[in-house]
Amino acid sequence: MVGVRNTRSDVVAAAGRLFAEQGYHGTSMRELGRELGLLGSSLYSHVDSKQDLLVEVVAEGARLFEAAAQTALSAGGRPSEQLRRLIAGHVAVVLDNLDVARTFLNEARMLDSRHRAQVLEARDRYEAVFRSVVAAGVEDGDFREDVDPKVATIFALSILNAIERWFRADGALNRDDLVDELAHFVLSGIS
Amino acid sequence: MVGVRNTRSDVVAAAGRLFAEQGYHGTSMRELGRELGLLGSSLYSHVDSKQDLLVEVVAEGARLFEAAAQTALSAGGRPSEQLRRLIAGHVAVVLDNLDVARTFLNEARMLDSRHRAQVLEARDRYEAVFRSVVAAGVEDGDFREDVDPKVATIFALSILNAIERWFRADGALNRDDLVDELAHFVLSGIS
DNA sequence: CCGATACCAACGAACGTTCGTTGGGGTTAC
DNA sequence: GTAACCCCAACGAACGTTCGTTGGTATCGG
Image (tube, rainbow over all chains, first blue to last red):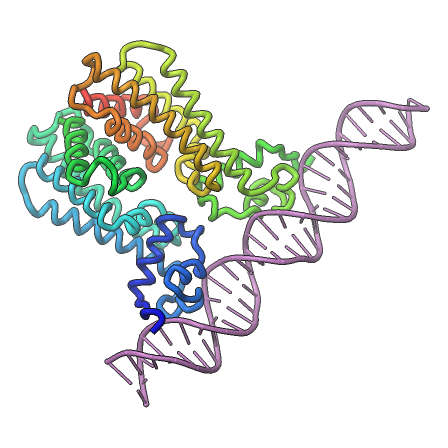
């Protein structure tokens, strides 16, 4: 009764943690095994390859962001409200899945070209959601006329994606305040 | 005749290129050698270790950003003008030294803790310049009263640091337009 | 008893690095 | 002017280690 048995999910979760902290190439299978209390070779009872782990973590990240976008959209409302919900959803995904989000954002480029292309498509779809909301807002007067939806989206997502680089849960800023600050900054940047 | 002799700067420059593209841990000394037309072992005629290369590239990045900030500051003017020059300077550093900037932004965390701490200090100093300009702008009415200089700085730098992730020189957006869009977005976000 | 989990030993390749050596280009002493 | 000297850049082999991965075997819960 020394150690609890590990499941595949445990392995993927631990991989996400280490990939986020040290990068994909900076993490060895033996180190990942140590994290779970087993030998590196034992990981192959759960997984076919190291690449598979990266694929799985990154795919989960893509899934989380897309789901959040759909949820935010489906609530309807005016573009400015939708954009605020997109922001809140993005923040929730990042803060509730920090390791996955960090791996998704920083390590996806280490994927083989096939999977990397898939991630790029998913990212484009996600970005398109933001862009269409901004465009709709420009269309019906929620946002300024001179706003370029493409550029505004890139800027907004730049701020959102950088959260992982500085936000600490024990800091002065809590999650709700962060969302307020973000929405306020972005909206006043385009309104 | 056939092969031009390489200098230490060549090695550091090539290292910056590969570190930017593939990450520090994703780049081997043999690959770096191949990039320069020599064996991996030959690199040690120029450099003491692989770490040294990362240290050198990252240090150059830090130097470039700090120099740009000082130049932008020394021109004087109102806070909104200073902030615009800080933005233009940051863009210039990133676009004129893409490899160095990317390595500085993404690979500095792979440094040993001593050098990493130094980079963190440099980054804090750089951030402090932005913060003080924003604070001065709030003080004398250039920017809104409810702006938190710390948060606004983080948001502005988030957008600036993300440029390396999407900007392509052959795109629709040229450098001057980029600076205009950035300054416009940031300034209207805090004014 | 069977399937899932893990260990153990080992593989071949690649890693960063060291070593002795080499060839070419200046500089210097005669 | 040339021979002796040194230095720089690079080679090629090898070092010890770590890498991702494999195959066979033991353990254990349902």
